[in-house]
Length: 470
Image (cartoon, rainbow, N blue to C red; front, side, top):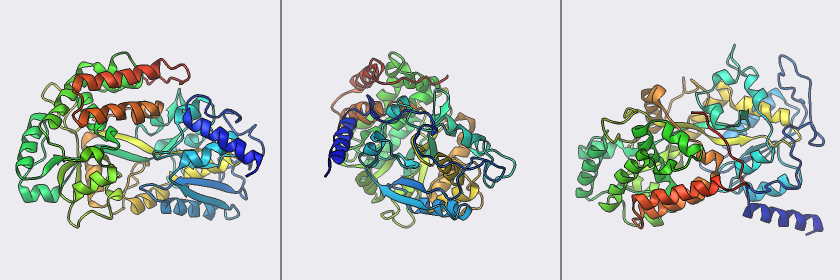
């Protein structure tokens, strides 16, 4: 190992310890590629609206998680169909931060990064250090294969908002994820159970399920934030979308609002009545989901990647189905059908990338109808491209996702604090959920812990704050 390697590793180790403060110290902080050293640029034209240098190499790093990497190889093949002289360097890893932090430090990042997974690089640090290229030009470019529309016009509602920071579109979230409560249609049909639409009915159903010798719930005890999703959804249905806006904007006592208190009190009932599979606090997401697939529990909270992630262990005819969180009652501001939907699976082009135009064009390929349909066929997940499922045969679970989105319509909701402040969800709220759903603390202490976590972020001057419009 030479001196340069030692310095890079030492710097990266320090950055990993303090991701939001000085994340990219030593790296140029341009908001674009003009001063990023050598860069590849072509001439813009009607056929090449982003000015791609046709023979420029492109480096793509993919997170090798639940979606795998085959979909990315297909997108790269589509890119080289248009630019056959371009050589693509593809790699995949489960350790995005450990792999790429040193390259951000010394100013040699890849052109495209799928910044996902537990080991992703903190976006707050990346954005505050101006380390990401502005993707606005991509939105205004014509769609690759949807005539008469710009890329922006082909995207589902909220896709741009989730990746925007203070009005700049910096992160292209590719999948469209629906979050809800999942059950097996076959299990429910065999037992004569019907999914409950109100909380009282849900508790009554849990009582029935437990009496039948099955645990009503299991969850990822190693990643307990999975259970924060239905709890916050319950609060938003009761109090309206402003509940999410207050949390996103780190407003004082946002976590202690009436709606959050009502939701926490409701969810505490499944803890105190022992409606959770014994041993769940020690399970990770795959283990808890596998126990669910094995019929040991009736319900699990997850996003719509679940079907793909569990494909290897799901029994034939299981027919997993997603449903919205039950309403607390008639006083809820949103209907039962309202469900959380949001863009996810983030991709970015570093500001210091050599081939920024190529990175934007790669995203344009992903956001083509052809690219989106191929992704859905391969991994059984929706993309942010509107109407891209047309003509695609969907697996059972994904058809229920589409139906849930249609039923939710304009009542869909989301929150973005987890994008703005990764530490708040992944560390602080996660820890509070671990205490709450294992029964070690009650509702009031749970919300106090969440609020103290939010307050610590709000008071930390090293963390850049973002404002979400109401």
